Image 1 (cartoon, rainbow, N blue to C red):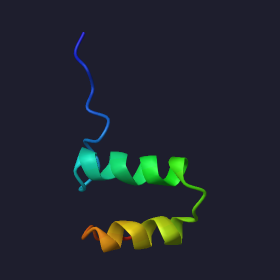
Image 2: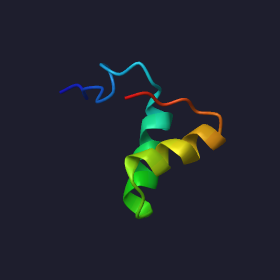
Image 3: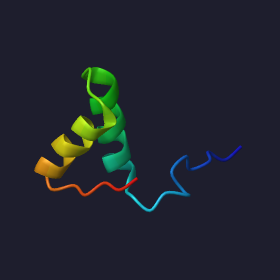
Length: 47
């Protein structure tokens, strides 16, 4: 059985998606605040 790539339909790299999800879950922030933190790290996120 082959493992399916969970991120194959996303344009963003899996590392960025994992970082965004980790920050959203770990810290009690809204999506807007999470987006701002990622922007400070040089990662542009759009809705």
